[in-house]
Length: 347
Image (cartoon, rainbow, N blue to C red; front, side):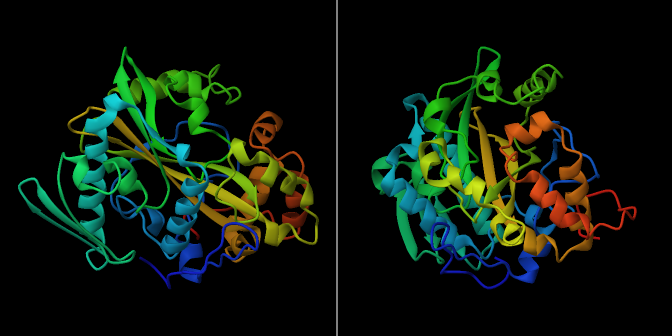
């Protein structure tokens, strides 16, 4: 975990989320070039990368406490944010094993896992959890294995079953999504849940992506970045709660744009699971306000250029129509037109 853990983060009114300088610089800024077009942009999920948030299998940062607390609140309000179909039981245990092995290896000061055959003991020192259980026997855990593990990790997770030469979303825990619904997409195929994305299908992007993922190998995870924008540091922008957050889009003014508008980036990682042959899709959401992006000269200039020249259809799909030009006008005076290095690193 980097920086000082923020126990008092609040992702709902009254909002209170602050980022340390270290957290700003490890942000997975999504634009390697001055223009943006939709693409699969997949690369191997190896240790290391242009920013520190990509350095571990699953990233744990200073917002761990706040994000786990927000996830617990959302699940208490809407338990169906976590659903797994019965035939995905092996995938649930695959996910639990991957999560516990990775966290205890990458962050031994915060997580401990001991194994004696199928008798396992898990300790999450951050959340004060100590649990002995029998691997494969869900009656020895307080929740089903997928839910138990996903509650202790930042981000969203879905389980894709592979059959009929396609991928089917047959499980997930989704509490920090950018305007899509697990309840609506549950049981859909790869092409069905991607259908709303404009132009990508006609460009053949999803056909190529599906062929690639059907061949994904165990032990060789991959990653990509996706992005949109969100008003206020609100993790839960689900369709089910649109009546709560939708009106925020009309609240942006030249005076508050730097505080209210957040670049919302998803570090998406995909893993082949060993027993079930399912694919785990991990979606880690990062929020950074314009005011923090302004502290990195390269990023503020590049964000101005990307938003200025963004395809109108993509801007509409991402829900930016009401405030994109306000951001562009605000950033315009901070962009001197100088050439910028290729890549997402801060310099």
